Length: 157
Image 1 (cartoon, rainbow, N blue to C red):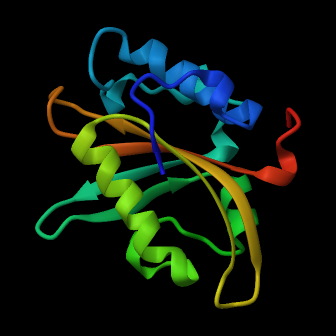
Image 2 (cartoon, rainbow, N blue to C red):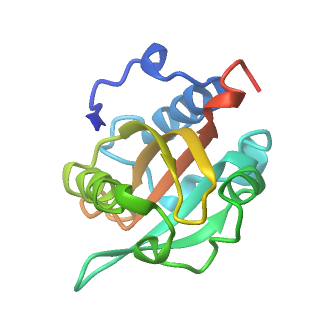
């Protein structure tokens, strides 16, 4: 896991996630994290298929997918909208992936990671993911803007 408070876009392997990070960074300005209300689909139409909006639920901390882009759904192989992270087939990587999400909300900084594994269903996943915190009050992370890009699409698609 790379906690990347000083994330240099060049460290991101995929063009789509570099573009998403730059958009988030512009929205953030001088704040730790931008509010969800600052996101407008019309400002990032080419990125929408690659993003998820994940709500942070508390007591206990859980993560619920509120919106999942078509590329993410197609690549994962099933609809994720409305589901909890803990209920997804992430095979042996489930604990580490949940840890990444917790780190993003606790540190209020982006978390970048690449994952390569076979789901319990037998489907191979090879992707890069960035977690970008969103905060309505400027203190508590209540959502994550998540970018997911299959590494097979890394060459600018």
